Structures are given as C-alpha cells and as structure tokens.
Length: 109
Image 1 (cartoon, one colour):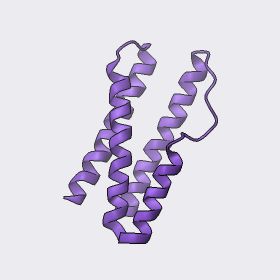
Image 2: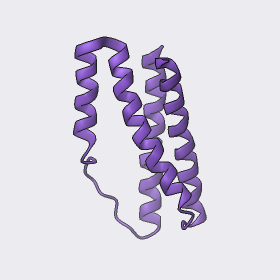
Image 3: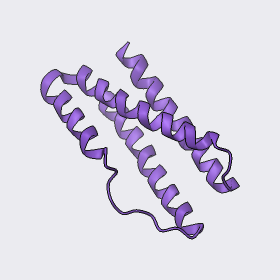
Image 4: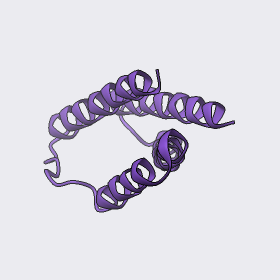
C-alpha cells in the first residue's frame, strides 16, 4: 500500500516538472536539464533507509524530502509576484506537496 501511494506521489512530481518546464519555456526561459544538487543526497537517504530499517526508515527519508518540497513550493506560491498561469501551477504543486507530507507524517505517527 505504501508503494502504490508513493508511486502516485511520484506522478504528481513528474507532472510538476512537466508543468514548470512548459511555463519556463512559455515565458521565454530555458529550463535547466540537470538534476537538483540535493537529489543525490535525497536518494542516498532513501537507499540508506531501505537497507537499514525497512518501511519506517524509508518513510522517514521520504518525509524529509516532502517537507523540503512542501516548504519550497509554499514559499514560491506565497510570493504573489507571478503571472496568473505560474501562480496557479505553484498553488496546485504546493497543495500536492502538503498532501504528500501530511500523508507520510500521519502514516509514521
């Protein structure tokens, strides 16, 4: 059950990347085609959790990742200095990340 939920969340993350890429291009920017610098650290934390402690440790690593994503999207959405299309995508992404975090936090409790 955890795996299926996390897969659905991954679909949300992939949608965020697609939507943000489209917006960047639409507004004249060029999206960066490189992984985020913290990506390696996040992956290492999840692998360590999987090797060392089963579901609980993997979920703890996932919660840390989701907290960061939730907070970053919330900060970006709160700036309020975005064109309407960008603001809408950021609000939805922030809500998604908040939902992901709430699920993993509740699951761990």
